Length: 79
Image 1 (cartoon, rainbow, N blue to C red):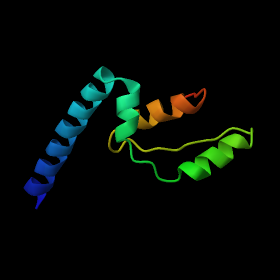
Image 2: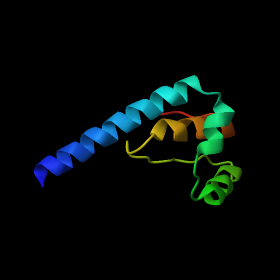
Image 3: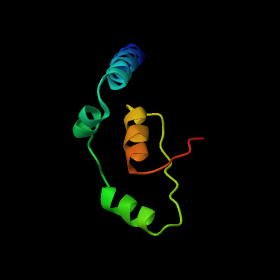
Image 4: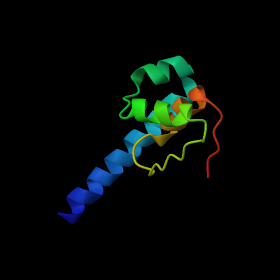
């Protein structure tokens, strides 16, 4: 079971590395067209309030696409 989990982690890491490289070389519009959004209406409503929004995102999957999407909607600061 440990070996199987290790293999899955390696595959996931390789896939994410390739996705990041593709993200950096594609036009932003193409990246954003591929992005699946959940809760966009909630984000838009919070942003419209004018008080700012805190987005907490773990480093799972291609979180750099999230950064690209957020930056298309307004100024962002990443910590």
